[in-house]
Image (tube, rainbow, N blue to C red; front, top):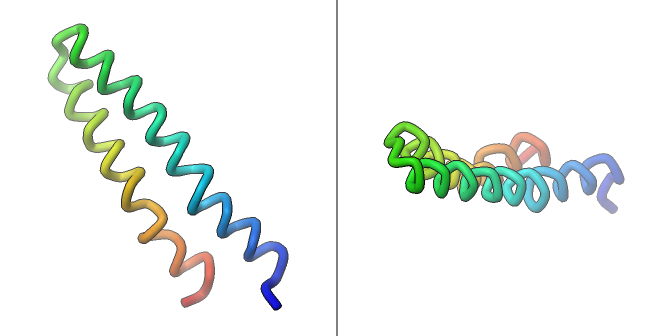
Length: 65
């Protein structure tokens, strides 16, 4: 049976943090496009991609695989 702390860590790193990062990346991306600021646009795209791969990077360490 899975440990409770491992299960809660799994949910935080796989479902909660990537969604929050994705939400903020869309805001930064839209702000960069509307204000014609290239650094915000690139930052929003980079944050969105990092939010997509974040669970694959952190979950092996959290779950001990």
